[in-house]
Image (cartoon, rainbow, N blue to C red; front, side, top):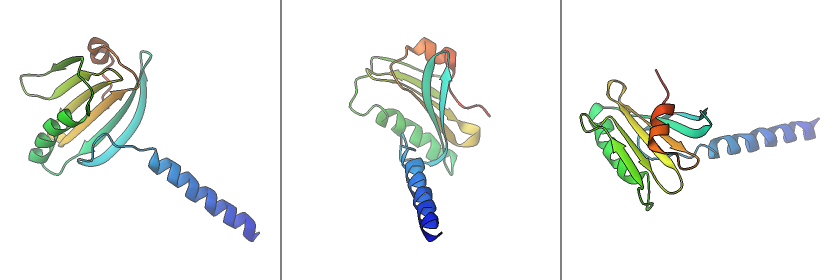
Length: 131
């Protein structure tokens, strides 16, 4: 009976380690609210939502995330909103990233494709988590 209990505890601990280690954050900024896999029109995305305490911290983090997200990869194609900077799309050699800033919620959502997707397809897919 004791052996069964020990095995059960080890399985729970091992399962927890796998579950929590699989949540790789795209950015260290903000509080991770959601981490979700989506498949839309045959394209696979991982979408993460980050919440910030204030409007100013979310706003300044948005621009830092846009600069950080690609690492050293070269941007092949980009599109962004010049009016209010609420979204940015960037296609790299290995993946495509879409970032959307929700001002009213002080949150930022980042959608990262598993492979490069052209920007018009990402816009059509609209991979952001809706409220």
